[in-house]
Image (tube, rainbow, N blue to C red):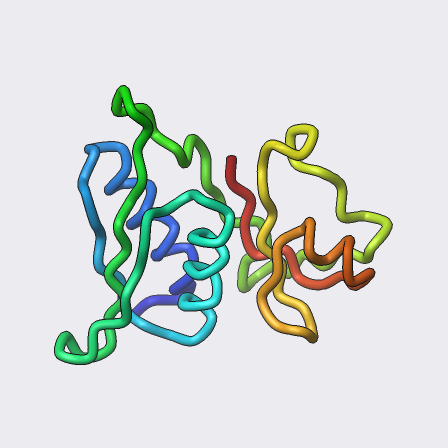
Length: 130
């Protein structure tokens, strides 16, 4: 029984990058697909695809630097099922001076902290990475 599928997804990505795997396959859901699309948009992963033949899985191609350095250095869950963390527009600060990214679930969908500041909305902070 999985109580927090998003935390499991982040752990799968964290474990795969720590052993320098080229890709990782995770179970599919709409919110996971939204998170992964924002990771691609921000340049943290190379690509992703939804696999129909694998009973609804998402295959994520991880990204590494030219010398094999990890692009995703830290990734962790902020809002958990037992403790939801909501931030208004004024409380959404830049992560590491703008070098990191917070992924936020809003009424307009899954957005990054930068997009939230542009659209002037807040929401539930799902995860932070840099």
